[in-house]
Image 1 (cartoon, rainbow, N blue to C red):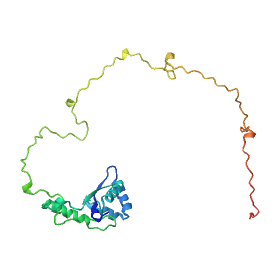
Image 2 (image 1 turned 90 degrees about the vertical axis):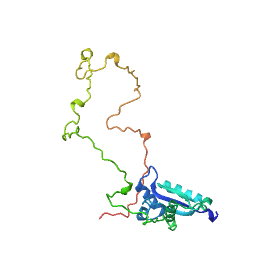
Image 3 (image 1 turned 90 degrees about the horizontal axis):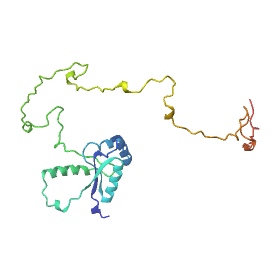
Image 4 (image 1 turned 60 degrees about the vertical axis):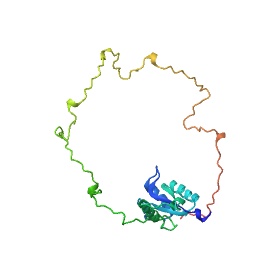
Length: 239
């Protein structure tokens, strides 16, 4: 395979395949890369990580298949720019993407590779602070909500008033028209004509006999005669 064809990288961004659990995926990756748990946790930061680079297309696809079976949703990236990229003037978005791509190629081939973040470009906001500038916030006029018709119900009972409940008509059943009564305890509930007829099966028991209590049930001819085993006890003695 020519060296020029080996310009693909396997990229991981911390996503796992559907149907897999995060803990199990981390255990699988520890076995695949033969590294400790701390190294594996560094892969799940949300930043793109180059697990392997300078691979052929076929080799990258094999790595992708192996890691997806382990539960890691990895992608394949072509590190070699195409011919049209030479004439394209990079925009600000292209520059930021180039910084992110360069951070994925700064590790060796032994196990997963770490990422680098641009601390000058990103920063964490304090808890509770507004992320939008004052000029970016829309001017919203305050809205008055009429709550005069609302009341607080006590912490017990039914919250729906009787006047708010939907009236349900009771079903009228004429009990006098039903032919039913309580049967006596132990009485058969099925009438004779309602019972299924079970045919009587004649079983020939003339060849059967009842043995006396304590008799040997196995005939002498059917018994298995054990082969006697001679045990040498000449070296044993009682103390």
